Image (cartoon, rainbow, N blue to C red; front, side, top):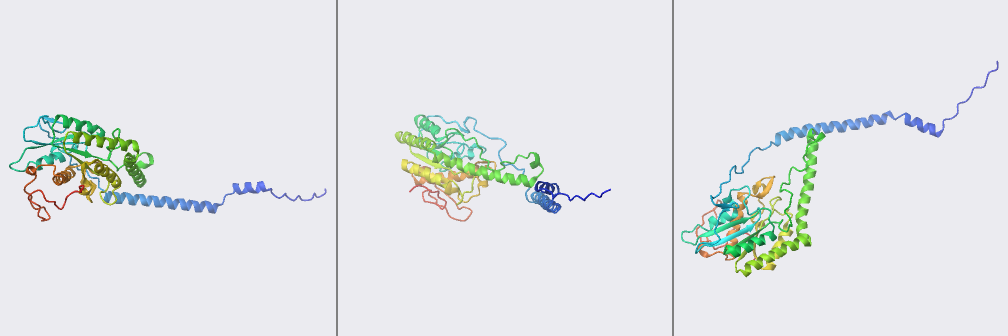
Length: 367
């Protein structure tokens, strides 16, 4: 038997070598990747535990509520105010306040509104004409819709002064559907978010930031777009024409939005300047209340902090004080009904007693 020569195995092809590499993974690389993933997972677990401990220690949900459980109204009342006869009594000085939900007191008692506070302030003297301040605030109304109320007021109710309250959503054609709540957006806890508290918190913060940016942009667009701006400016000029034709003085009151800090970071200053510029050009006496609320924390002024940024009792009281000062400055009210007596405030500063001098807290008015 002859010995057959030993066959030398053929060298593996390139394809075979590539296949072998795929079939034989680098075990060291897998270990390193697993270690990294485990480290990340462990860090997330530690962060979640720390977040829950800190959240339970530092953030205790508040359960209190200070809004009235019952609203008390005059027996004869209309639209959260007492019912006034179109024909006023002889010698009566009548002011009609026209505006939206910032005028209508919302979740305040009816006599906490700035119009009713003004009425009390203007009836303090012993011998003076009776003063009536009618609250014609209609929630959701725009300046264009309020022009119809101004026409009805001067035609049927014989006012001695009309006060037009302006909010920054007044150029709307239709009421803005978004609520004033800028917090707790994007916090729906479904699936993983229902159990992963830190991830839900981060998602909520991102959603809040996006919501605030959209909120600011919405109001800026109202005053930048020609359609809404012309809608608003045309209504303002119409109201001025109605009151001037009827020979009734008009005072415009511009409120800030209490949804943002009322300091140098307040994002709507340019809008205030545009509105006050329109009022000055139209010849309307005006007051911008932004300076009256300067640096006051918004939560102190909101009717429900973090949930509803309409003005509360404190904001209405500040508005009434500033509007009263503006009416004195512009000589819009008779001397007889100006407060003749003032006392010291809590800081010990003496206030003028004749009700005609400027005090330290005067709101900005046009000179």
